[in-house]
Length: 245
Image (cartoon, rainbow, N blue to C red; front, top):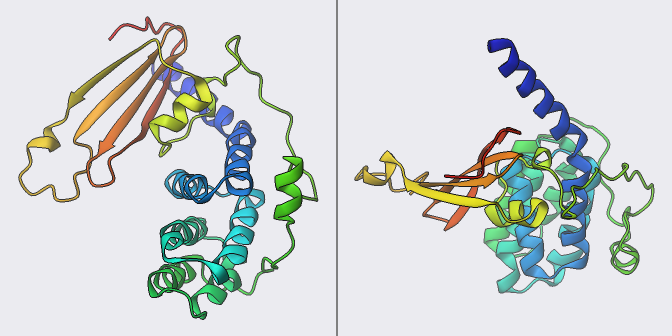
């Protein structure tokens, strides 16, 4: 039994690595072809899933450098999330990008997040991202990745035209799950014991929603009351899933 569980975990981990380009391309599309709301959603997901792909992070860095000089107060939250996403990558390649924002005359909130992200990535003297290395306008028009192109072969889709559960990552929003793999066969939601803790000021994990996919498995999502967002906590691949709560 233990061997079976280990094998399933290893298989899921390998599939998740292979599927990274599917998710990464989605983030790239949101960053280059979407407005402020889409960019913020992409940056939040990149932060919460711990995005490490430099092709995706380079696009985020270019969007940040392109937008911050002319940003208005309503854009600050979006740009701050880009800083957080870059910082959480722990990749020193983005130190100079974040330093430029931190030393600018931008809104103090944005400078604060840029400085915090700088500490997270560190300055190891590694090769830095250079503004203009990616042509955002060209990407927006073509809908393809900028040069050099390294688009991996698309992952196989199921009969509904959606991806399998193996593309999902911990930290994704529930809406992102549905966009990628489609609507579940059924759902089930219940409160957790944390909902009754008087001093749970962060409002973490107050409720869990189970997305059941018949013949595929289930996705366990946790609700954060502070951000009003439900995110993936666990993905269970199980061909024997009945789809019933």
